[in-house]
Image (cartoon, rainbow, N blue to C red; front, side, top):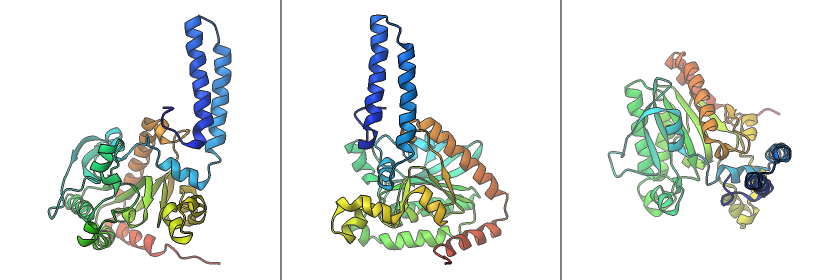
Length: 319
């Protein structure tokens, strides 16, 4: 793990990893046999990882979903698929760099990938607008969904956004209308749709590309009507109350599978997807392939009926 990039609760892990690294260097440099001591410390490290990551608070899981080394949409597409051809533009206004998509093969099956893309350094973050799409981004997504429908190709959506862009220009160009149209149209697109929430899933920004037959969610992702900071700012006028808001919102994968909002939790590698992106991508790929195989075996009219009923029944509770 890169000691320059870590979260506060990861500090004990970072410190122990450094001790192990220093001991290995000392053993080699001084030609001293320390394999027993190193093995003991590595065993302690594995136990420490398990203890920390099995007892994370909801707020800590939200922080983990934003880890700067966590894989983003294009990372997953590169690791999971072959022959990706990115498609650009909404054929109306512009090409939104915060939302990417295109055709690719996943285990020989052609799919249409669509997802939000964040940036890592300052230049890329600005280029990708921090993963916050404008109306033209949602209209590009809809164009790609309809293109996939035309050629009878299933759709895989990777959700990772802090929300739709709230700027004046976006509102002037119809941000709310673009999201609402996508929700309506995705409910009746006549090909299977698999949604995977890989990081942040905030509000309409996520739902604008998030209507599908199956909604899968990575273990340390979050998905909610609003971010914990936004909720805290509204309720308490204090963004520092975000940990309290996260507890109230219940935005984690375990919460949402229990509430029936998502269908399945995808387990991440120990310490999160950022510590072993390849393993994370292979796990996501396996679940996508298996889910697509199940969905493609159903008549499309049955699939559409089940899709609509799935969302119609959300929020129904009996006491």
